[in-house]
Length: 310
Length: 313
Ligand SMILES: Nc1ncnc2c1ncn2[C@@H]1O[C@H](COP(=O)(O)OP(=O)(O)OP(=O)(O)O)[C@@H](O)[C@H]1O
Ligand SMILES: [Mg+2]
Image (cartoon, rainbow over all chains, first blue to last red; front, side):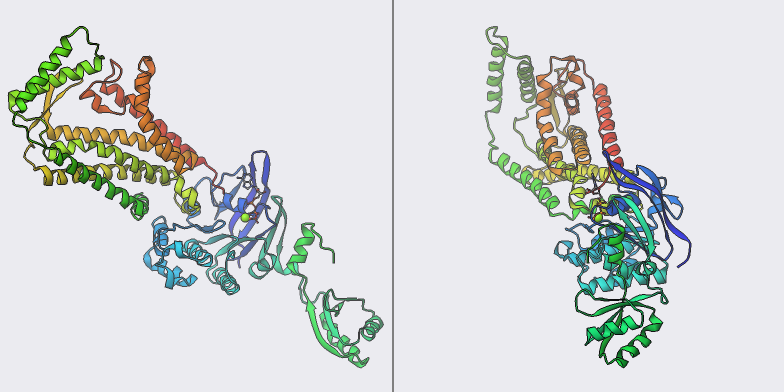
């Protein structure tokens, strides 16, 4: 990932009627980065994406694609962008292939070889000549992705892309995105309210609520898994009383884990071995030790103020 | 731009309904030929019949006790003049050949206009209804080019419809009635209420060309409503209603001086060749200017709304 900026959004604002739906949003997406737009339903993710791709007007602010203003030179800006906004809708009376051919005619330089390539990539080869009417939701998602990739964009924008994919499909899709970003230097912008998904896909995430930017974080710093920092470590032991007194002797505060009756202790990863030794020495049978990373969900809920009461 | 027009044309051509409508047009032409053929009975005494018809008409026209609206008076006078011409030139009335039949098929073109309106009313609204508008508008093609390609495709479909009516009428008319009367002149009452003649071929071309112009106006209305309201049903219904109500409206309002500025007082340019305009003093040049103004305004509205519109939902 370089520091070159592919897409820049400056003070983006959308007012419809008297309602401010997107409020002074600014962020920059780097080349080769998978960037997430994360927010609860109605946060303004889709509205933001619609402004980026020119489907709706911009009330205030600007969108720059490789420094080209989308509202000033739409055609040259969009030639770098591939997008799916909400569900990928296609012409149902045409086959998948005819759909791709239709959109290929709208971009100079996209030929049949390129169509075959993207069809192969999204794994739709066996059904590409069927009418879209007969496609399942997952197949339509794949066709949508093929369409977005057709002109080999340097910026890929996907709104809730895993909607309708099965778990295997989601994993495959994630791998696609990661490799497009890593190998081709493509910048990918995905929106989702599924937090776990973002955690697995993105390098950085912008958290949006009520149309406002709450924060931009890199996934690593959100999860707080810098290797030397203290982490919550979960011990599975047979004798709780004994284990708790052992922790107390080592000056470690411990807490029962929420569900299974295990014990959580916050400690330096380097100290784990010593603590286990102490437990064993005291006669506690340790049947499991694992670190508990703070999930993005926890960070996210904390940030958007919807605090969960444990 | 050519590729965009190709795209739009393919989308029209790959829909089943397009071919059903085309087939219907051909079927209607065939049925018309069969019906006309069944009613063709040569009358050996046709001169006698025409002469008595004329005598009756003259009597009606000269009888001060019979009230005749001016339009009917003109029509009756014309009929007398045409009958006299037919007798003098030994042309039996009700004569049919491929050319006369093709001229009559212009009314099939009126049904064809309804079909083309369906295409025009759906071409923008349909993309919104199916959600494909999002994919269409996120390509590196600006909206002006998209809407222009759609409009041009609608015009091409309109033209294709008239070509279909014309060609199928000539072929089917030829099969049923033969091609013998090509050079025969056509006798009609012109806009100045005089009996005139023109070769049937020229009359056909003129008739089809003018029908095409008036259809373009209807189709442009459908396209505009489609672009503005994003509803195919509304666009199709409203423009077909205007198609049928428009002309009556012009007659209804004929006492107002501004009646001549109504679109439908001007759509049928044939009125300057035969029959005469609905409001005295109108000229073909006037109508062409009025049509051009409507054409520009309707298209400007379609374009403006389409280019500015927020595409959400
Ligand atoms: N055309 C519109 N007119 C009025 N309000 C709108 C319009 N479009 C969106 N909104 C409102 O703007 C807000 C943001 O909508 P948006 O679709 O951008 O949310 P989102 O973050 O994509 O949500 P989701 O996760 O449900 O997809 C919502 O409250 C919505 O009701
Ligand atoms: Mg959304």
